[in-house]
Image (cartoon, rainbow, N blue to C red; front, side, top):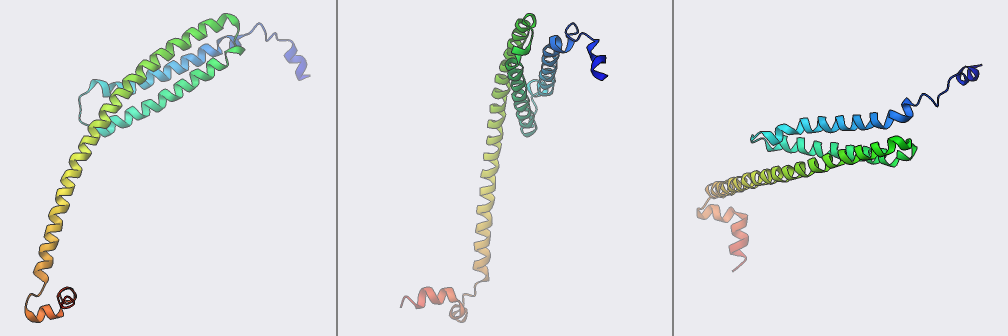
Length: 170
């Protein structure tokens, strides 16, 4: 009974899902691309000193661009299901979106490399300061240990390091 009810409709003349699904998918992909550019554009437009936050945004943008390219590839590989009259339009649209994505990816990678370099310089400066602090702490530790040693004759005879170094040499 259910089958008879579906037979009354001519699904071939209603080709919205077949004919426009690729256009809708490309619109969604382009919307994701625009959303990605709007999230990253403050990094390009501002001159702030928050390299970690900017680097995270740029890395997230790179991942989003990967997803967009994967979806474009999936749509392109599925074009053999699309009607011929929509295939050329869809291929042209895919090529246009790909050019935007590739151009934007180059900009993101350049800025990411720059931010990564800035971050590495900051880390090197911090490591230099840290190594100087460790050196000062080592000197303080040596000074404290020298103050703690009993240098009298009675103290030297009880000191195992002094005994091992100087008495065994005789």
